[in-house]
Image 1: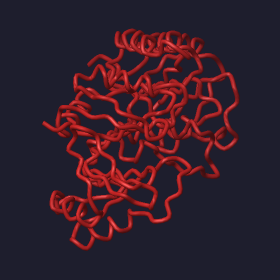
Image 2: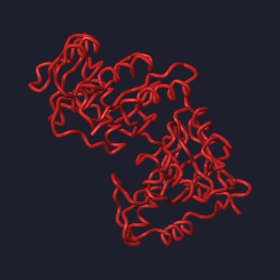
Image 3: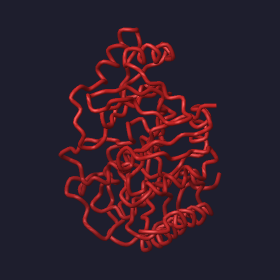
Length: 351
């Protein structure tokens, strides 16, 4: 039986952690080679649907994006033959023939998009996306670039195209390579906003209709601004200054003190708890546990685990275990905008 092949993406600095998750997945995911730092090839004895189902049932922490490698096409004049892996069912051919086969497999009742990545710093004079998109549109398929149901994924490396068709939900991220892009605006407080925006979008989080939201380690106010933009009342807890652009916002209350001082003095109920403090995981988790009696049952916790240089897996495991005494752990994930950290989403236990 032919093995199924995949192109996957992770952060280059998390490559070993991602491969370790593959080894422990039970899917016989065999690593073959890197195409670029953080982008590589794996294969499995399981078929594409089984791999996708398993990754959805138990989402890996460090995998950003994955798509099936089903077709190879020589493209750009650099390669002399299409790549192949022994024992896999990758089909090699010309782009028109492959597009005809892909169109036969696609559901004409569902929208599509064409997504593409390429090796960093490698030139690509002829972009195949237009050819693919125009062909599928000519066959009557409907394009939706932001929220497609099915995706034709393409990766270009050394004159070769690696192509696959998949349901969008099977790719882990709706952005190729997991590289989520947000525009820097005039009122952007800090790039930490993108980290929270990505978490909300990636996990499809439903935020409360009303506050208060408590934001630990708030200054200069990136996460607070995201909540204010959604019309929520925010208590920003930080001894430091908040950004001038939000400092006088009518729904912002700045508690100029430490998290521990706030916990001892606050008498209300918290509808959403945020924690992006620059503390080690054990101390940061303990603050969330100390805050738990103030957090409304069922309310969300969104926090960052700031990871050490080594023993990351054991630190994450210990942090999750401790946090789970007061919060149901919903998601644990390294997102594209994380930097030496992961995002953890929890829900306060209780009725």
